[in-house]
Each structure stands twice: as structure tokens, then as C-alpha cells.
Length: 573
Image (cartoon, rainbow, N blue to C red; front, side, top):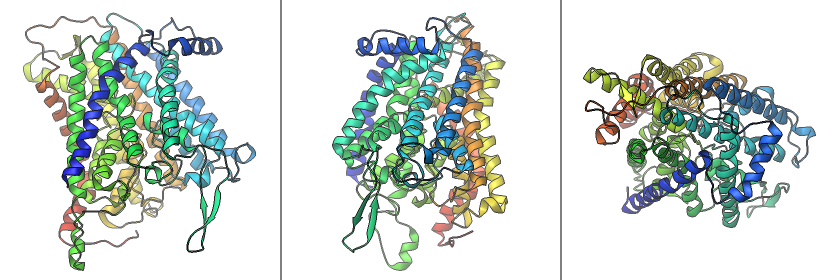
């Protein structure tokens, strides 16, 4: 670890804090229907979309209607994206003449992009046509992100409203998010990326001859437009297989910094939106503080682990003083690789500028734990906030038990229904992660895809279902996942992780919106201070520890202990 590395991490943290309030203020005005700088330009377009879709923007929805609209929209998106992949060979903008995508891979990819996961079991530049990249994947990068943010806003309304039977209008929330937030920023950032050297064209791939005389095919295409929303919408799906380690996706240190800020900006901003909409910005900053503390813990552990060399090198009389550079992009080094790794798995982004499969055991455990906890550390756009608020409900229930008082949060009494729904939303993740992992490591069709033996091979399988269920999309690169078993089970895990968490969350939003706000009293637990932040963090860590520690012990923990003892494992299953 170096002073320079810590300074870069500190600089990122300062920028993130400075961005949070203005981003939150702007988003609040958008979702409250207030006038913004872009209203004169975009308001006529917004009204046009409502007329085209037959939407009455003044009519709000019950939580069930909100959920049905979201599920219907997601299913329609799945069908369209699946069809684009299966028919891409007869559709335009396919200069490389890539063949149709196989049924199992098309299923996996379609579920992946409608759930904001962007898991990719394929090599993008040799699998998808330009049309699929633009009209399919990039479009869903916008729509899945807008859906997640709309859902978070719906839950916030549940806390902020009193005696209401509605939580907003899904079609209005999604439209406003796309038009006023995602699209303008993505256009500006896309142009910045082009300025920095990211390609944006429809040209065929370029054949070149290397200095050694070998033939090399350089892929290109509409990269910058996808790259911007990929990061801003915490989608993460790369145009190139190397993702943000590829110089065409992430050319230099400036774009690397911009990408990390894009990943966290909306998740952090939504904490401020929460505070503003409930009428007390200190409440939003308390949520931000809990997220930020967990983020710092993960960053420190990852950086410390990767700054140490592998003890196996000692037997070779080789001392890599710079730490573990395996799998790192040399342009960014260990500090920025550790920071990027933590950021992308705290959010449900999944973009990588280093290979997680090459991380030291404890360094690889941190991104896994980040996702296991539900990616509530800023998290995916929308999903991070509503995931954190589920833990807040549980934390306030625990606080109520300790003092023998009915739990409440922001003046809303938390009764059995809300607590049960919160626990259901939290426990569905380990059910999917541990269930599918157990299946994969006992069946030959599952173990045959693992490229490593021993605990690291187990970690590859575990990380895959952690990433899919958590809607992250990153992977331990040693897994050969493009096979029917893995495509189908990972697709089901993505579906479970997204939608079986959303429905209980919306039920909570509907229930809370109908309640009156009870004035604070002498016995009210304060929820805007350090005690509340500590309680929430404690509940998160205890819940995650009790649930996932045994599986972590079989993977990265035992691998770390074996490494320290000098035990190595051969590749292959």
C-alpha cells in the first residue's frame, strides 16, 4: 500500500460526497414533477409519450397495479430482446455476420439485461450484432435502470405519505427517470468518452498486421453510447470481453475515475432524495453514512489483500514488492483496481477493470461479500436504497424488541406485515445463492465448467450465483458458463434476485403509505445519528455472517489459510 494509492481513494471519496446533494436535489425535483432546467425541452416529449401509451400522468396506482405494470413491462422487454438475438442474422447492422444466439444463451442474456444484471456468458464482440448491442442491450441498460429507480421512489413515497392508497405511477416514474436523468447525462458522458478515445461507429472490424507479422482483428462499434449508460445505470455489461480493462472501453485514468463516480452517483444521490422526500435530510445522510462505512471497510480490506504478494513466490526467491499484479491492468495499478473492484460490487454494476478470479483469496472475498449482503452499499440504481431500507426495517424491529416498544421508523409503526415482508425480501437471496451453488458443485454438468480445483473452484461456482442473484453481473473469470445448465440456472437466479425481492418491497410501500404518521415522543428511537448507523451496520453484518459464513469458509477463507501454509491446487476439476 502506498500514500499515493490512499490519496487516490480519498480523492474519489471526496468527489462522491460532493456529488450526493446536488444529484439528490435534481432527482427529487424530477420525481416531484417540479420544473428543471431541461423541462422546456423535454416536457413536450414527455407528454407525447404519455399520449402514445394512453397514460394519464395524474392518475396514481395502488402498489399491486404498480407491480403489475412493472412486471408486464419487464416481460415485454424480455420477449423483444430474446427475439432480437435469435433473429440477428437476418436483421441489419451485422457487418461481421455473427450467427443467431443459441436459445439457452438468448434466455440467459435477456433475463440478465431486463434485471439490470448484465451477466455475460459470451464474448460480446463475436456474439452480438451492432443492432442487438444498440436496440437491445443499450436500450435495456436505460430501461432496467429506470425501473429500479422508480421502484425506490415508490418505497420512499410509502414512508413519506400518510393515509394514501397509492405510491405513484410506474409509467410516469420510469419515463421521467429516463428522459430527465439517464438520457441527458449519458449523452454528455458518451461525448466525453469519445473525446478520450472510446469508439462510436458502425464500421466493420479492422484487420491489422502486428509488428511480429501476425494478423489481428480489432473490434470496434458503438461503444461510447453503451459505456456511458452501462456505468451510470449500474448495468456493467461490456461491449468487449475484457470490459473496463479494455482500452477502447476505459482508455485512461480520467475515464477510470469518471466510470467509478458514475457507478456510485445515482445510488448515493438517492439517499439524499430519501431525506428530502421524508422531510428530513439528516435521515438521508444517516443512510449514506451506513453505506459509506461499509464501502470503506471493503476498500481497505481489498487494497490490503492485493498489496501483499502471494507467499508461493517466496519459494521462487522472487519478491514482488508491488503486491499481487496478476489480473491487474497495469495502467491503473493495485489501488485503483482495488477501489474499482469494491465500487462495482457495492453497486450492482459488474463492470471490471481487473479480473476478480486473479484476486488474492481475501481480496476476492470482499466483492463476494458485498453482493451477498444484497448490494446495499449504494447498490444498484434504486435497488441499493430499497435493499438498505429492508435492513433498516429489521434493525428498527430489533431496536423495538430491546426496549419493549412497537418499532417505528419516520413516524410509521412497523407491524408484523412489514417485518415479514422485509425478511422475505432479504432471505430470498441466500435461498437462491446457496441452493443453486449446492446443485452446481455436486452435479458433473456443473463441476465440469470449473477451471480450478479445491476451494478456488468452489469460489468460482459460488461467486457466479452470488453475482446472478445479486444482479451484479461480474464473475470469477475461470468459470466456463456458456453451457445450457449454467445459462438456465443463472438466468433463474437473476429472475429470483430481482423480482422476488421487488414484490415484497412494494407490498411494504403500499402498507406504509396507508398509515398515519405518529408524532415523535420521548421513547422514539432517533434514526439520524451514530447509534442508528451502528445498529443498521450491525444487523447487516450479523445477518450476512450467520447466513454466508459457512460457504465463505469453504471457499476464500480456507483458500487463504491453505495459501499461507504453502498448499497449492492444480487447475482443472
